[in-house]
Length: 183
Image (cartoon, rainbow, N blue to C red; front, top):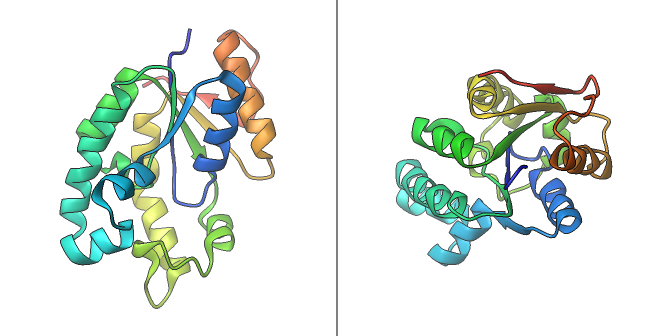
């Protein structure tokens, strides 16, 4: 039986929305690593990036992932860059069922266009930046995950229902938009 789900993927793919819905359906606790960091640091992710730098943020993120993935019966939404460190990917994969929620960079950009809380997208051409980030991280998301879900044209309800079915019976027939990974 699945003890916890950890959701990974690019910013804006729906990890928080899907995670909250899944937690509600399973009666699990929902946690968002970025929100947890903001609450414990008493500052926004953007402020942490600008004041302390990305390396310090990634150190804090690694400590947070270690702390949160040690809990049971949780649904964890991770930050988009949580997979950048080998140790984070290893902890996620070893401590729960990791689901890569995947969406094209163009679709993600449409969802988050104008969102000033995304520090990595504060560039002259955020769409190109999003494409570069996505391309650099996709293999890391796949490496960290047990399942790869293509979420384009899928509702949060549909995605969370599939994950509930995985939770209840790992032998279900998976739709073509959900691929088990053998890594």
